[in-house]
Structure formats: C-alpha cells, structure tokens
Amino acid sequence: MAKKVKLKTSKNNKSVSEFVKSIKDDDLRKDCKKLLKIFRDASGLRAKMWGSSIIGFGEYTYYRSNGDEGQFMATGFSPRKSGPTIYIMPGYKSYAPLLKKLGPHKLGKSCLYLKKLSDVDEKILTKLIKTGLKDLKKSHKTSY
Image (cartoon, rainbow, N blue to C red; front, side, top):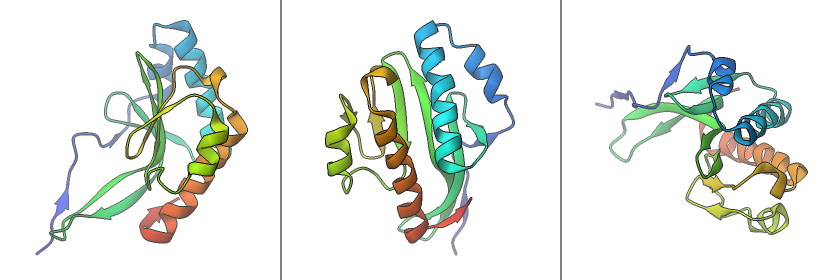
C-alpha cells in the first residue's frame, strides 16, 4: 500500500520576507527581491518557504516508482553563495530554445544555476517559469 512521503525540504510557515531580509550579500538580496516579483507575476501564486532556504510557489503531488506519494513545490528559487538557483520541476530538457536566449547559466536536472540575475533575460526567465508550470500541470496533480 502506498504511503505519503514527508521530505526534509517541506513547506513551512517561516516568513519569506524575513528570510530575504536576512541575506547578507546585498546583490543577492536584491536579486531575490526581483525574483519574488518575477515568480509572483509569472505564477500568480504566493511565495512560501520550503525548508530553510528555498522560496517556492504552488505545489504538486509526485509518485515514486513504488507508489508512495509526496508533495513538493511546483517552482521556486533559492539564494546560494554562487548566485540564485531556479527550480523548474519538469526539468529543462525540453526548453533548449528558451535556454539559448536566456543568457549565461548552468543546468542540473530541475535546477538552473545563475551567477546574477542581471546577466539573464528576465522575459525569457518568466517564460521558462510559465512553461514549466504549464508542463507540470499536464503530468502531475497540482495545487495552484
């Protein structure tokens, strides 16, 4: 029988604004404030803290190969020492045409690593967020 999985990185009631204010690096804090607006505008969703350092928007239900299910954010970002990390949960493999236009970045499976927000095209980033949410909705049960 399938069971519900509780991840270490789960949604909580910590204050997003207090978290952003606590970021010591001025440039990274400014990037996070901009990213909050970009994600809010792109998703129409409210920001929530996930774990201690991820700001997420919306959520979806995923299923493991054994049938267990869990909840995770639909999209979001995290300020890292190296720069902001953007999370698009369907991953980026289908988004090559957009990524070519984005600007300098590195990729993980569902992670987009930026050095600083000013290096990338914010319109393309917005399009990536919207496309990722739309694609996630096609394949998973979502709450947004």
